[in-house]
Length: 508
Ligand code: PHE
Image (tube, rainbow, N blue to C red; front, side):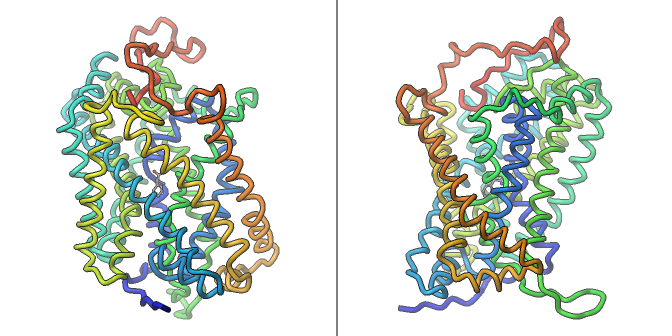
């Protein structure tokens, strides 16, 4: 039976608000936590360059496709996909893209708020001066204590989930829009202040060299896969978050000067978002690595870079207490504007099915909160209960980011390139330059699916293939992990503060 759903969620007030919201979704833990640490692990500049290429040739075209599908459908990703499929005279089963996305968004939300909750704890710790002059052991102990305490982690997780769903419950205009209008300017100002602060430290030149000196000898196949996967994660692609936001994007907007309606172009808007997201990631690197180098720390510390190396570095610098506090406020703001985009697609779907928004938000928030308890316990009580990829958290994280996200991106590219009526896509995108449109189409039809299949195949092979260690398998027991040696070339060799930051980082 044909079901019609009216758009019930409201629209972004302007193109600029859409840009803020989508950038808010894109800029998150991926930029400030993950990008610097994978750059550190995969050798700096070469990895940065790869990442830029992946964003340009895969990320942006798929993001254009996702926003286009969302705006065409005008509803939550599940209903948008069904609707666009219907309009293209193909089976409504293509709605599976929406269901898959909603499920991966839900899984991601459940652990995203746990990790983001750590930033709240660190704001508190930073403000109370715990890191001031602390030794490597003391800083590591702060992180270890947090991970060992299910109650503290649960408290932070609960707070972050409440902050997230509280915004979603208020709706697109009163919640999401208001939140990003405050959070994003705060985030940009904090980032500029922190880069300025990093520029005053002795390690600034080393930090910049590390980020921007492209040493191609360090490129590896694995780095390609990591960079490609991260370009999906950082642009929030493949799970419907951007599709949901695209649904609230107006087709036309009144020009403030002439008063005439002018079309809102998807292509140029997406370009702006991707550029800002990339600049934020680079700026985060510029804020972090100089501090790491000025303190003779190891840039390849892994996931612990932000929660161990950085507070240690701040603690050794003048004004460190204030700036560490500002840094973790920045992380919390970035993660907050991302987590709301993880909650929105499912809530919007329930609202379209007749639920009250606050009830839907409460239900989704409560369910994700319960699932998040599994992640909380993975760092302490269930630490040794490993199966398949490792702990409960390792499994949820692996399935959502390494399997469901690329799969969602692949299906979106296939749908937009091969299944959807070409005339509809062309009309929705309304690109002025036909050659650019044809280029986008070719990329989305051939190049993007091929790249995603490659990524997918590689990560599966390196995880489950013969003679391979699981890529993200159970981490070695803590006592077997070796402290990361300080890199003599980058750091003063006799620096007594070189910490024993372990590679296992977050998953220990
Ligand atoms: N893009 C976010 C980040 O960089 C993560 C995210 C992924 C958010 C997918 C929403 C959807 O942290």
